[in-house]
Amino acid sequence: MAKYLLLKHYRGAPAAVNDVPMDQWTPEEVTAHVQYMRDFADRLEGTGEFVDGQALSPEGTFVRYDGEGRPPVTDGPFAETKDLIAGWMVIDVETYERALELAGELSAAPGANGKPIHEWLEVRPFLAEPPTVTE
Image 1 (cartoon, rainbow, N blue to C red):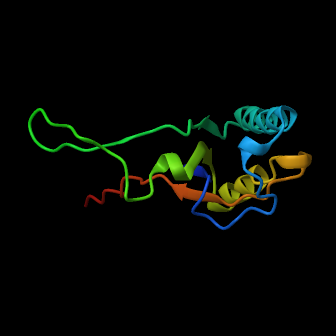
Image 2 (cartoon, rainbow, N blue to C red):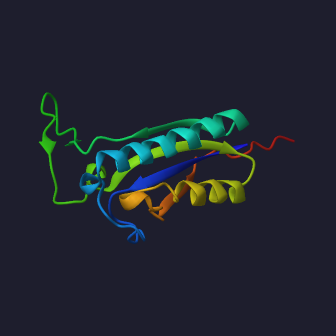
């Protein structure tokens, strides 16, 4: 089994087919989207492939160490995850192909007008320890 991170982007990826921002959806459309995500996670829990997933708040701040007692809080001029990352899911699957299959299915979550978003998801494997060879 290998773990993969499925990243849902606000921006930074190619535009989705149904590219209406979530803040413009009706409450019913938001509910349908969230339910799709829950149902997807529940099904993967049943197969043992679901690890965790969360939606992220649009608020966030970059913080950097700048010397003893001075942790300045900065915003910009660079893109920040609060502007880019909408949420994530961690899956634990047998193959890379299965990770791609599940990401494709997750991309079909409903959005505006109940139609699939067809959003682009980023699939990233967890960095694993290299095998140790002993002779």
